[in-house]
Image (cartoon, rainbow, N blue to C red; front, side, top):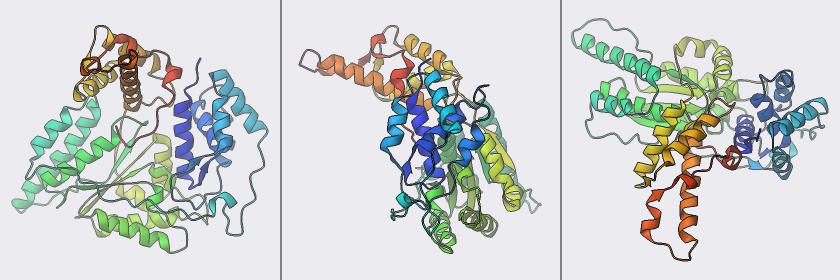
Length: 408
């Protein structure tokens, strides 16, 4: 079976970011493969050693670059058999990592890189919008039935508290801090943005700002600086919601890891600013459980878990159709059926990209339409308004160039 190298590359980049490494190296690719084939009987014992090989954490806070060695390894992964063989070989014959520097970081990571300056992203609320208006927009999202039900219950508690407060009655904490679990591309960021607006509309928070952050936005390079950096991020967020993607990367991995300092600062802020700050953390289920369990303060403050399941083929087909409509592009005869067939082939595969995969399929179909229009040397607008069935590739290997995005 063809190997989806794009998704493996995405997972390798995520691993490098999570460990603050400056470059994506073969060990990150090996870890991505170990995660991908974790349930394969030949690879069951590969995950833990591949994970240990990522230690220690580095001190790089910019986006990691793809090393030539990692790129060369990815290029060899043409089939699942190739990937399994590469994974087992790497685990059984680990390369000796570069010697750490005196500061405990790898030589390639000692160069300072500018941290990403995450600015609060307005959730673009309408002036004076109501909960009902935001809920209607929420309900219009494709799928996510169980997610919608849970969020609606949270908002109902917030509204009930508002009315009881007006009547001078006691209220019950609505638990504004949330844990979103699930694979990439399932709408976690999109829902977080809507939740920020709902909290503001319901009166739970005095503002609807949403700040999207990762480990690099909270962790600094020296002792004592992480608390300052984390507090600055929190101050830029309030009043509003702080959304931390891949939050499991903050799980402390040793005494030299500043993740514990970021977590301690975050826990204190959640208590000190309970009226102006809500925190939503997101990531894979198992890793998020480990993260929450790593600190008693996190366990006591994150009470609500919302799981985002994979989209079904029918839901992805609907998402694909919406992308086309929003781009003002029609779908020719058989085009949607062809897309549906691709989704049925792809759904259920490990590390499947969900809505990101749908976006990749649409973008490549658009590129094929444009190429088809240019074949005769003259492009007209009429040739750029309809996707044909032949524009939609049904070979999963050709869709491996998908790159990670925040949300969809």
